[in-house]
Image (cartoon, rainbow, N blue to C red; front, side, top):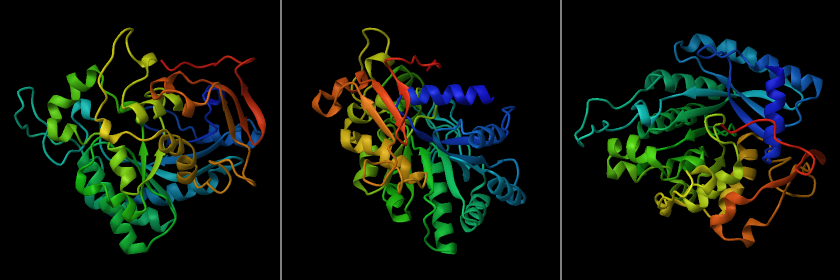
Length: 358
């Protein structure tokens, strides 16, 4: 609803978020289409954040939906909102064995099963669709958790580049829980951004109970390879997948640097070892992914994402300098003030958050 969007914006401002990409613009599983809500807020001037909308690709349909999506893009621009991206959900999630994997999941005894997860869009159709979307000027935003889904998305983007030539659409793959080592370098080669959710890259009980035993040690070590992607030259953009998990960028940065959850995310007194710490990012790399990286993915890097003369004054004031404090205290850093184009939109001294991370 309209009130819900404004409440969400207020809450995100309290966390220092001044823009985002909404990955589900359209009707899905009973959720109402939120395109009219964004357009109303944008036209009335109440949408102060800059938002890119990702129109939902209906995986139960085929190429006949392309003209409809092009029309929704045409009408889906107002104020600080633009529906210029397409969201393709290529697979599911590892915890229920629906993430698309190159090799089958293991069973509780460590033996191979007959299940390798799902590909919601058949790979041949995926290539055809991505080529057409790329040719039409859309950015494609993939949900890809498993290594097979990642490869299918990269293969489709490679096909589009071969068919249409290089361009500046800035396609991106989100989540990237398991990436086969052979595919790491392909992100930079294809100009594809790695859209990462760092908060998930931490050791916690569900990893031991629902994931690692069914992936096996070798694949488990390929989870959330942020460091490898960065070293291979991939564009990194960081986000949260809220409301699936907390949208707090500082908590995400904490995990990206420490490969361990902030204390606020854990049961009282619990600690866990770092989760494949060789994949950690530096504080500067993680902060850049959340700022310049997301601005780049949303084609806003010419006006925001860095503090430079001539860019918008989209600024966040923190209660301390994380570069001068121990890395394990990053999750304790809080936002004091948030500005959008120089306008104060959140002040911790006078404003309380209106939403919850629960």
